Structures are given as C-alpha cells and as structure tokens.
Image (cartoon, rainbow over all chains, first blue to last red):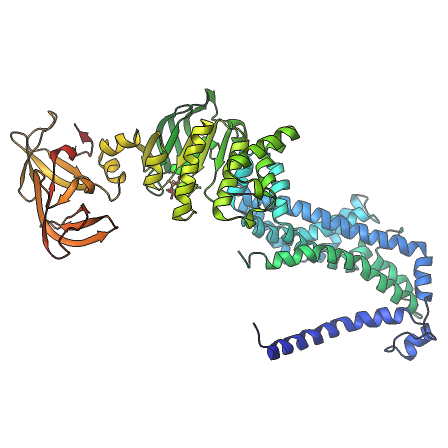
Amino acid sequence: MRKPASSLVVHAILGLYTALALFPILLVIMNSFKARKAIFGAPLSFPTPSTFSLIGYDKVFGDSKIISYYVNSITVTGGTIFFTLLFGAMAAWALTEYKFRWNTLLALFFSIGIMVPIRLGSVSIIQLVVQMHLINTLSALILVYTAQNLPLAIFILSEFIAQIPKDLREAGRCDGLSEYNIFFHIVLPLIRPAMATVAVFTMIPVWNDLWFPLLLAPTGGKQTITLGIQQFLGQYITDWNAVLSALSTAIIPVLILYVIFSRQLIRGLTSGAVK
Amino acid sequence: MSEVKIEKLRKSYGPVEVLKDIDLTVENGSFVVLVGPSGCGKSTLLRSIAGLEPVTSGSMTIGGKKVNDLPPAQREIAMVFQSYALYPHMDVYNNMAFGLKFAKTPKADIDARVNEAARILQLEPLLKRRPRELSGGQRQRVAIGRAIVRKPQVFLFDEPLSNLDAALRINTRVEIAKLHKMLKATIVYVTHDQVEAMTLADKIVVMNKGRIEQTGKPLDLYYKPANLFVAGFIGSPAMNFLTATVKQGGVLVLSDGQELKVKLPNSCGPGDAVTLGCRPEHMTLGGSGTFKLNGMIDLIERLGESGFAHVRLPSGQTVIAEVRGDPGTSSGQTATLTFDADHLHLFNAEGQRLD
Ligand SMILES: Nc1ncnc2c1ncn2[C@@H]1O[C@H](COP(=O)(O)OP(=O)(O)OP(=O)(O)O)[C@@H](O)[C@H]1O
Ligand SMILES: [Mg+2]
C-alpha cells in the first residue's frame, strides 16, 4: 500500500489535470444554457434563472438539417468502426496465422500506412471519389476513414492475436471448426479488449474530423455534425447559442460509445497483469 | 474399428527431416505410448496423426480410411494438449459442447454427452465455471472431457500430465488408465515420464532423432532392449555400459583386463568389440554375483528404503548400482560390485542387441 500522503499528492495532481481538461467542456455546456447577452457578459458564471435560456437548443433541434447531420456523423463513425474492426481483425489474423508468399511484405506495407498521413493523398482521393461517383455520400467518408484507420488497427490487433496460444486455434481445428468459425468464435472474443482500444482510437478523430467532410461531402445534406455546425459561424456574426448547444449535444454520442467500449478497454489494460 | 496404420511416413521442415520412415500400427483399442528424448519428433508424429501438420510423404489410415488429405475434424480424432488449450471465454459446459454444436449435434444429445462426461470425470459441480476458475487438475479433466464427448475413434494425448504436481500426476494417471479400460478407446500418448509409459502402455514406441528405435510391450523393452539407445533410455537410472572385446573360446575381456565367461551368440567371433549392459537394479554392492568390479564409491544417493551407489572404476567410468537397506559403507571407500550373467545385455559394435 502507498502512504496516504503520497497518494494524496497523486490524487491532487490527477484532480487538477481533470479540472483543467474538463474546464473548456464545462464552459461550453454552461454557456449553451444561457442567453446571448449573458454568454458575453459573464462567461464564467453558471446559468441563473434570469440568464437561463434554451434558445440555442431550440434552434439546433428546430432545424431538421442539424438532426440529420447528427445521424450522418453517427453513421460515418459507426460504419468506420465496424469496417475497421472487421477488416483489421481479419487482416491481422491472416497475417499472423497463415504463412504465405507476400506475408512479410504485406505487413510492412500496412505499417507504412501508419507513418504516412492520409491527408497527403487528399487530391487523389478526391479524384478517385469523383470517378466512383461517391462525392457527397457517406460511403465516401466511411471508405476513406476505414482506409485511414486500418493500418494501425492491423498493427495493434496482430500483436494481440499473436499472443493467443497456438494450441487454442488447433483445439478449434480438432473440434471441427472451419477457419471462419475459429476466427469468429475463438479469436474475436479473445481480442475484444484490443478491439475496444482500436475502436476508441478510431472513433474520436473520425467524429471530430473536419477535413474529409469538407472535401468529400460538403453539401447535399450529407454533412457531418462538425461541418454542419459551421453554418452558425459566420464571417460577421456567429450564432453562439446555436454553436454551443450543437457542440454540447455532439459530445453525447461519443460519450455513449466511449462508455460502451471502455468497459472492455479497462479489462484489456489490466488483463495479463494478473495471471 | 479404429486402427491407426502409418506407413513410410516422412516429415520435413524445409531441409530438416524431422520424421524419417515411420512405420507404426496402433491396434484397435490399444494404448500406445510414444517416448523419446526432447526434440525427437514425438509431438510432430502426434500432430501428423491429428492432421494439424501436413506430412511430406507416406500413408496414414485411421479405421481403414486413408486420412492423409483430410482435415483434423474429419479424422475422428480428439487431441488433449499439454497446455490444456481450453477456451478461456467459455464455461466448462461450453468448452465440452463447443465442437458438438458446430457438428450440428441435436441439443438433447449434446446435453446427454456432456453430462455423461462430467459424471465420469467428476466435473458436475464445475460445469458453470470458467477455465481460469479451475485448478490445474480440473482443467486437465475438462480437456479430457472435451475429447470424450466427441466420441472419437482415436484419442491423442501430448504430455497431458506434465503441468501437474507429482501427487496429482499419479492420480490422473490412474484415472486415464481406468478411462481407457472403460471406453475401450484407442489412445496414442506422448510422455517424458518413464513411469507413465511403463504403467499405461500396452505398447511403447521409443523414438530417437525422428526414427522409431523399438516398439514393444513395456516389459519386453525393459528386458530385451533391441539396441543401445533403447537400453539406455528405458529404465531409471540408466543401464550401465561396459566395453569389452571377444576372446577365443567365448570369453569377454573388459577394458581393465578382467575376463568374463558368458554364453556368446554364434554371430560374434574373436576380436569383435561388444558392449555389456547391466541395469543398476541388477548390480549389488558386495553381493555374491559371479562377476566382480572393483572401484571407489563417489556418492550414495539415498531414496529411503533403497538408494543408488555411484562407483568409479579404475578406468574412470562411473557405474551405478542399487543398494537396499544400509550399505554399510560410504563415499570415498573402495567397494566391489557384483552381478550375474542372467541380467547381462550384450550389444555389438553397431549397438544392436546380440542374443
Ligand atoms: N515448425 C517447425 N519448424 C521447424 N522445425 C520444427 C518445427 N516444429 C518442430 N520442429 C523441429 O522438429 C523436431 C521435433 O519436434 P517435436 O516437437 O516433435 O519434438 P518432441 O519430441 O515433441 O520434443 P519434446 O519432448 O521436447 O516435446 C525438433 O527438432 C524441432 O526443432
Ligand atoms: Mg513435444
């Protein structure tokens, strides 16, 4: 056991850090419940009965477009997580389990993908998406994000799959499982913590990204929420009520996803510590 | 019928030949134990029978059906791994039922088989537990249960007891012997443990460097080892070997000049170099045997009722003899070892047994 004094210091530091990290978020949420005047007059004070206002939320939810932007964001993030995990795990399994000719070369190719930022290829990606007639579709975004996140996913998942004892896969083979069933019923359940980790790593940048939505789906009602909010930010006037409310509500879906994954994640980080 | 027949089996990893010309028949219902030094290819042979390892050449049949190109599932085998290899994310029941579910076995049938196996192996109170909540011995029983429920033609065991402590190992060994009697199963079993091999086997297969050195009943291997390797491998501590030359008139001359009169087979003539073998349990310290060796006691290992005396001969070679009770002597003293012709083994220069 730690001494109480030193554990107090540790908790103080962690508490301070948490406060620091949460402060801007708190500020956003607080001010989203205030009238415009109060946002500028006293940005640091909590909403009081006299300054309380739901006008921002009214605007956001009154606008059916904004709601569909949420749906777009959720679809894109969800789709990306799904395909990244599915293809990432499958590729990782193939690369670690089967010996074939281009095995090492392929693994190397994927790890290069971790190092080269996908945005360098933006121009060719736009050309490709235009040629495939996918401009202003969510599919374009899901495809690009999946490609962006696959290399790291494969890298992380390979490490975990390599740790599954060989005997276990062979026991599966003796039990009469097909290779697909071994993958889905033995390998996948055992790398769940790793998949949760990958899901969290994947989810947050995708949800927050502005770059590809701007390039690939800027109009046609296929904007994501981060892009959609931009309509409230004008050159001369900005509708701060709406922006803050939209930002506040945008936290919720990621938060829910995070809670779902983190239960797996924590188990993943601590498993192996105790044998 | 679930006879396993292996003919001219070869297996290479790249340029390295791991199994060379294996011929082996495992009769229906028999318990065959593979023994041999580490790295001799026991696991490889077992995994080849299981179909987990493709073979380079040769033929293999199980129950009369050629299985060379069949995947493990269609060979009707069940394997018990040294590491148990239980599925960590399933409880005991599902570990056993898993394979059956994929074989589309009816639910009631699965239930019946799993419960039957659980009853035999005394796993009934543990059916709802996960593998990590079980002790080593319990995990081992689950692994065996998983093999039983599939009703395979052949059971394959790869050192199933080596992760257990001594007491549990003896217990489980007895359980396996009973199980074999009850199920009348055909079993191929790999082990490092001599006692396991001697007690469990109907037939022992001694392997060395990818070859089968000898196949036979446990006591045959003990009393009539076919060559020097088997003679040295079976029995613990190992058989003592003395080099000698054949002289005119059926007399052997040991390296220290001592002459021994033994019955020599016709095949050896004067001048031949031979090796004499005698097990420690057939040598006595100061007894009344026909042949005598003088030396100095290096060490006496006491195991309780009996023990082993390590005696250094003038030639520098150390010979081990079993001592019973109080030997009345201690290390550093001179001693005389005696032995009889009855328990002598004779091998020619190529290491083959002479009878
Ligand atoms: N995948 C492989 N690639 C190359 N060589 C291998 C491979 N697997 C095993 N071998 C070699 O084959 C030989 C036999 O291995 P095997 O595992 O059958 O030995 P074993 O008799 O079971 O030994 P132990 O008693 O230590 O388990 C060893 O020399 C080993 O190095
Ligand atoms: Mg082995």
